[in-house]
Length: 241
Image 1 (cartoon, rainbow, N blue to C red):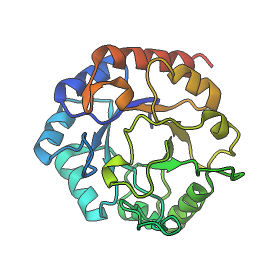
Image 2: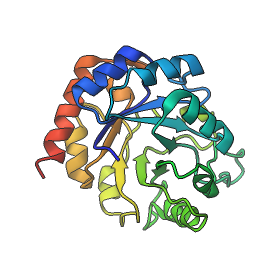
Image 3: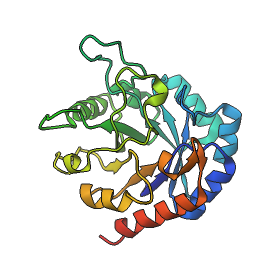
Image 4: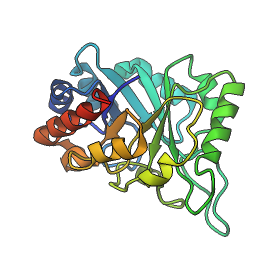
């Protein structure tokens, strides 16, 4: 679906600059509580500024199929990223998770390309992606497997839905490299920036990346020089190995 994605765009000029830097996908955030969350009018303006050939991805967490499909139609999105929790089970003694995306949601999105955000489980489990495997299997059984799994950093289990991504936290690259791959293509997110993206790609063996906070001057405000440096560093590894 993409090699380099710049996520959390909030301004039309940033959409143009991300494409000029060489990103082949951009993300528009519709997660309530996120500093990068867009209203309908601004989302349409940002999407309209994305050049032809660059994938426009809507990022959602805990939204219904009807809400997602309405945004796809009114904004003009090409793909959907489900960034919520994989399941509703709370930690022992903790509050119920917010922003859950059930596996059967994929099958209710009309055949749209789906990116499923997944996280390595904390702790020493031998398979840190076991929950993600079960979710993908259940989605496939419901008629809608995701096209891509995006491995992001583990968010607070009891935090607000707006903290599910874009926090700057990183994935344990070494542990991910030792984890058996999923049944769908995988991409890497979580605290990536121009200085570490090459090392992250080489450590994990993945060849698709996504950045948000690591290419910003402030939440939601992209830095042109950082975007250019990030895309250049990522593409050097992606297309040379």
